[in-house]
Length: 287
Image (tube, rainbow, N blue to C red; front, top):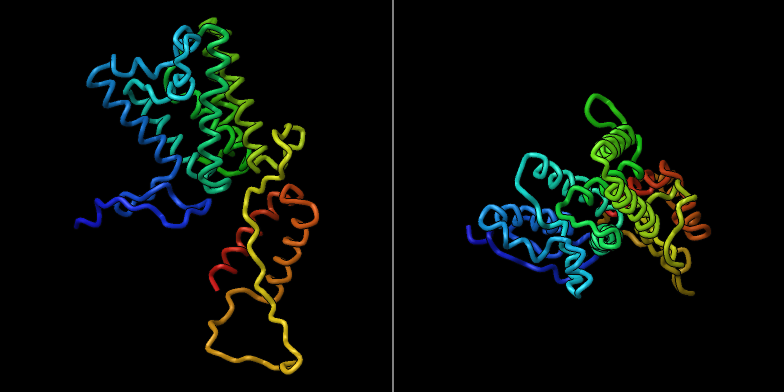
């Protein structure tokens, strides 16, 4: 029973490892931020003034309280829509985190707080709540996977367009043009950061920040081919090896994809080729 409530840290942290584990629950970047938002709901219920130090207040930021540029999305008022926003942030953020890794996704969330926060400060607008960040994360997921179908078979990009359109209509009706600029800053940040972190490969018109060549999916290592020595030429080594989980054709297909990545980079693959690479990689790791 005690093992369910234990806290452990992975000894070797790869891009897919959680930050830590609570019992059997892997605490990833998406779950960590969503959990902090939920904690903020209880803090608000206990004493609303306790959240004041993390809310985005332009005057306070200009007077040196720069941490507010990072913390303002964690200050949320408990209601149904806030709970839905937190749930969507966790669900779709978890999928993006699987694509780009734990560290990059955390940096994505930081950028989605800081850059719109700077824009809001320049426009003298206060802010709090996870909604802006959640919309940007959801739209980034839909841009990466536009043909994923949600309720009723509706494609993901239709939902993203509807949510952004309704948000713009609401802000326009409220005559909140400044908040429209903050929303556009959030979407632009998601696009630039996502492109820089290896997503949105089909959107070449989006600038990529930095000069590196990010990869959305780590290329699996090819199995090493043993080199026979002079005295072992033509020798066949037998053993109780498990049966292969992929065919010769699949191995050839995987080698072709890896050669294309090595020559032209991950961005040269189409979406279908990336999905096929993931599928073949799982088979290779399962041998």
